Length: 328
Ligand code: PEP
Ligand code: MG
Image (tube, rainbow, N blue to C red; front, side, top):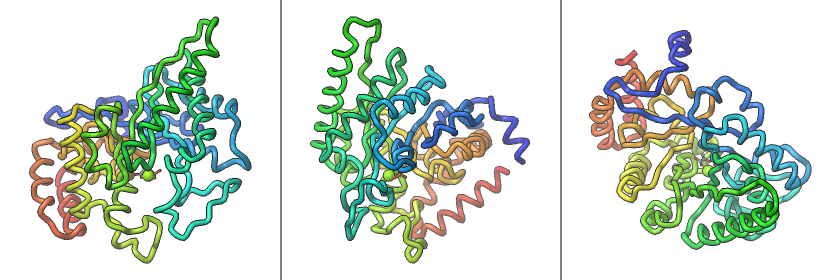
């Protein structure tokens, strides 16, 4: 099987009835840039910038961040690299920036923290913009957005950084381009504000890991309730369907970058719903490509229509697995 999967590495991601998808990778470590999988993807759909922050003993300087981001952006100047601004808090602590909270997943994390510390945000965005000089493949993504006002505030800071870097480039050949700015759809509150967001963002990216956690009120890392954490829960599937329908209606590009996109069953359900961009850990990319190349969109529609009526995530999983087996 793995030889068959490997043999498709260079082929397009297209179903048997010609539905084409773009597959991106989720990255966090610069080592991932050297993997073959990077070249097999259509770009980076999620660069978790907090990973290098977590591996240090202090905040990386603007120059250190610049060097990391430059390395990432310049590997494939023709591929989009979506860099998420710092998403610490919750389950991602920084050893040198302790946060003590009773309920960290509902607390100070992601954009909440960086809007309270605009100096951290500005340094990071400046580093990204400087790293993108001469390139045009940077996209900036905002994590843990709950309200439209947070997007506006973050965009104001991004514009400020843009003007600063533009000013610094005066008299040189360098020209800064304003990156596309998008938001993670991972707090359920956003599911009901997509029309308000559409005019002010360039793309949506669904964080199905947190969206599942928050929709189901189940801690994604708590073993005791792990059995309740399931992205095949009917409420999650309905939310995912609603998001892609709205994104299409509003003409906003949408990606899924949670773990579900990297699982064969999750990927085909998402494809059936209408998603055409999936971002996943690089080691899942060829497997997902292989599955998509093995199925017909029309058949996945039938499967989706059936499982959308199921009450139990386990029944959905069973039906999806039976379908996957039927296609080999
Ligand atoms: C998500 O929440 O689905 C996501 C992709 O982000 P993270 O797993 O880093 O929270
Ligand atoms: Mg998340």
